[in-house]
Length: 147
Image (tube, rainbow, N blue to C red; front, side):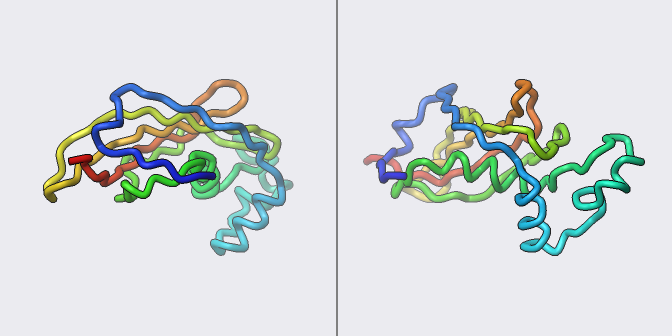
């Protein structure tokens, strides 16, 4: 992790970056359940899950979001602030043993309402080892203009 100043003018529509991968483990399931209080059987009861359509435990969507976004945190931009996330979708299930990575594409830029700032939208896709999108969302950034 390192600091890199990137101003609004520096973002290019269509620019893309790809993260390293991370394999999802049973420990991830247990820790996330403990942090959130989400102990639903879909995530933790292997025997019950055998009777369900996926046949195995499925990862918490919020865990895949957290890990997928965490993978993108390789540089600190002191010129930008996260405004939040829009259009979050859990597209496909993730299972223990799947390896995910994230792909971030600059999808929109517009001048902000506040003088000296603009809004940059990063479209984030979390992808499994089969090349399938498992989660998608838009990350909204408030970014300082260079001027």
